Length: 296
Ligand SMILES: [Zn+2]
Image (cartoon, helix red, strand yellow):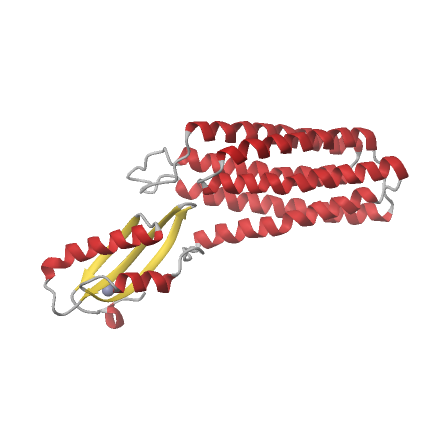
């Protein structure tokens, strides 16, 4: 089994951005409470999606170095998926809190300390820009880091939103701007959270990974010499970046059992080259026993 390797240099960039984002998340929560700004609190929740995404990317990189044991033959790969699920659940709760709080504040918008709020938001913008610059250099080939990079880019919009709300309140005293932008940022979190949760649930359901077309996998296998038919074909994700395949391959009548090993080897090489699936289990059969003996 192999894993997208993340070099030490890239990992250091990830750690720095993680540290910066997490620190700013704490600053923003405190700032949001002190200035009474819902927009800041909503942006803090938004920041937490980045902290979660970066944390998962780091976690995946660290996990790939941990050996499996006889008790946990896959090591701790699935912990990443469970963490993603927990992260999504927390974010859903936070979004609902923000929407409820915004509803409450729209009745009678409380005064917000706009100047300190602007200062906190400006720091956030700088943190985001540093993160973007560092992750753009590190992204490139790693899917995990690319995901983290895209999230930080998305977060830039949140900081800009808080800045606009702050300027509006400072210049006009129109305090509706705060819950208004708070709701906007809160809603912005939802699609990403939904995507994260759906992805994690699909992995737990052993669903076929979205980038794999199962019919295409079967076609590739059928083209291999000696293969008459394929059944019981499964492709699933162990954890992000690691897919596994199992299949039953029925040999053509004309070939002898002696080629069984060669056929299964050719199948394994083909799915690895075509679909990047490195972990395959192939069962070679003389005839199709599917209908009577095998449930899947
Ligand atoms: Zn079979």
